[in-house]
Length: 323
Ligand SMILES: [Zn+2]
Image 1: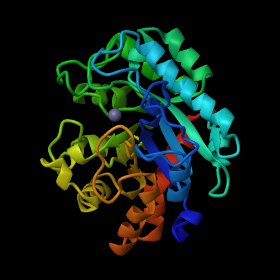
Image 2 (image 1 turned 90 degrees about the horizontal axis):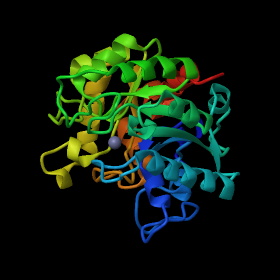
Image 3 (image 1 turned 180 degrees about the horizontal axis):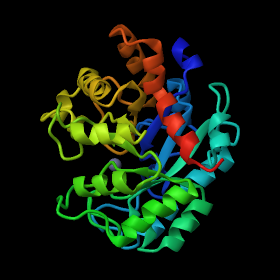
């Protein structure tokens, strides 16, 4: 393990790995190092990842007729893995669970919903998903749902009354709100309404590369001012017009811009492993130390690196999750 990872708490704020637990030809056993995909338990262990948000994605472009069921199936994938590997993976439900994670212990799994589609316009289902362990709510994927509009819809509308109710309910329950994928009007509403810090689990900086999924400087500042954290994502498409040319250096340019605009206490990492094409150099989970080495080589102070690797996200989750 990387010597700094021995001391640092490493937290990855987004992956789509649960999509690969669904029955079918693509199904993977995440207890073993996969020949395909980006992330599994051995590669997380090799990369020194201590905490991971596992997104439950309710389906793309309404191709899935039943988004709630789609999210539940992914959730079942994580529960099965927790049963199969109890000494290697543990579910984080509380701030105490999170504070107790150590580099030598099991990896902490945080469950997230990626899109309020899964809630079917119902607050009751938010409570149900909370009981099942969901601790992050990404209000939007790219499209429109009962709560809000995603980045593909445009910026005309902010949160619906249901979306506003969700913000209040998440604050009360101890669910972290995630604004990645949300349109600009929605992000503004969430920042105004939320009494708790919010995160962008997997985004980059629009001033560095103009992509609809990247955040403006005003949004970076707004999230930071509310005590939140932006997870710099490894998605090649958000870094360069020719995604196959995106490298670790592109990612570092975004991180450096975020450090300058949002401040070192408000930058983290959210790979999007198993959900996108990843920039060269960080192709899969075991490569995490390559990023750590690159930050050390650029002369970032160790406390700044530890913040980026996971301490910043840990601070937000310890504050927001139930005690
Ligand atoms: Zn996403």
